[in-house]
Image (cartoon, rainbow, N blue to C red; front, top):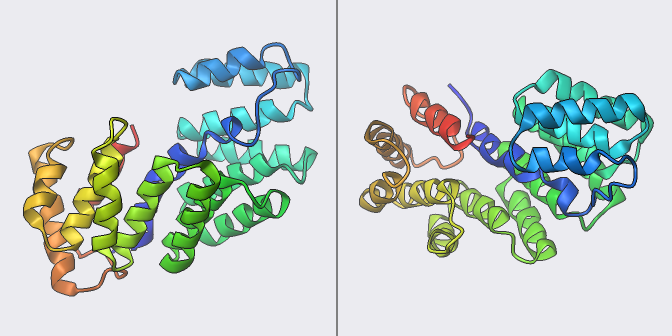
Length: 269
């Protein structure tokens, strides 16, 4: 049996890893090759980015931005242990680094330690109370713990601080659906799904919201936009099981782990 909290790992790395673009501008003055490393990471060339960041750290062991970029690139490439060590090294050098704490929080989300993630994101917010990504990460961790009301407050703060980030709105919609308010979730997610920038994650969150509201027809229609028919079928069966239990914050029905695991794997690509 797995807990609902595993569902929130879906968005954690993808939505937090862009910290450098929001409150921690690269600047590039720390090392002339930082721009190349950031460019490689932005285009998804993680091996090149990791190589570049490591070279920068060898030349300048106190280049804070290189540690963060390396840690997030390692985390994006699923090298979790080394990512954690990298953020620990960064914190040893820069104990109040906002992005280092966000990086550590991201690691804890991936390894399913929401309590530690909450501590890390709260440390980041102590230094920068208006950091939208830290609020979003804290929301994910709180949702994993089942505290949906507090999670939603943090998502709303992140949305306001970021000027309406669609990814944070999608997280809010998912939290509302799993917290027992699928109608409000549908209102938010339908709008996002109709936008030109709609992502597969938004559509799958909308499919889940429909399922939680008992509208299996629409859940299926939205789900099949991005998922193969066998996964859509598994997801619908899963939604029906949740409807039967009437437990939006309980455990995943036994025998339906495959649908969520496969969907998670697909969405993380």
